[in-house]
Image 1 (cartoon, one colour):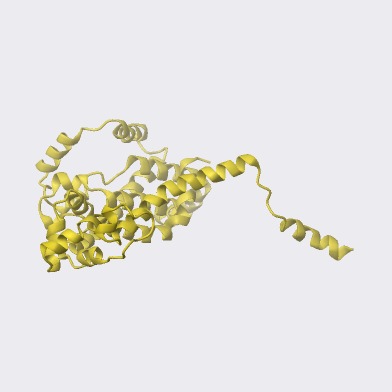
Image 2 (tube, one colour; image 1 turned 90 degrees about the vertical axis):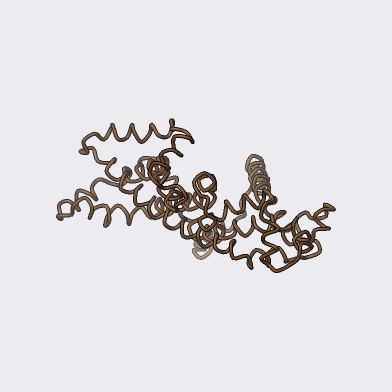
Length: 304
């Protein structure tokens, strides 16, 4: 009898979950939204691996038709495309590193009530979220600083996101003040408290904000479109922008060593192949920080 009673909780734990009507409807809505986001990407991937005739005839849906990998061969053999890839990786890493340092150094002091002018600095930070000088004043500012046609024009402007700073500031404010008091009693200064107490406890928020900064910079092309004219400094997304506009397909085929006929044959698949080529690296990185994503945003958005 005792053995049966001991096994009772285990039996109940194995009971299947009963889905209610609202839960089923919610699950179907989530599946529908997920498919809406996923299927266009699958279609682009299938188009990039299909022949021109299959694409023009509308046969391509979610699976490649008449498999053709020449578009990817043209992209990977294009020195300009590969140079743009590595330049984009470099810019993204440097920008993300600088942005995280700036975000931490601004968020941490604003959590201290002893900071003179704390309300003023908070107001000035929030002010930038609602009002901007506009494209032309920003361009003139970049020009006067001598940053035009320089990689620094892709790094320094917009290096600090007020939204991300507020998330990290809220997370810092939610940490128990007793931790800082104990560290102060042990003789730690503000920088030691930040490096040894706050940052190790904020890995979820830091990983989330790092993802925000990295994805934002990886996908951006408008700043390069405005500030960059040298082809060596063109990031991958700007090159993809020009490619979609139809200005680079023939150049890529020429670098491949093929004739104009080859360029014509892959002209319909070169654009989707370039989209996959530009999107895949950030998709590879995302799973490594995915587990921090929900926790980081949730904890940082609510002060406990």
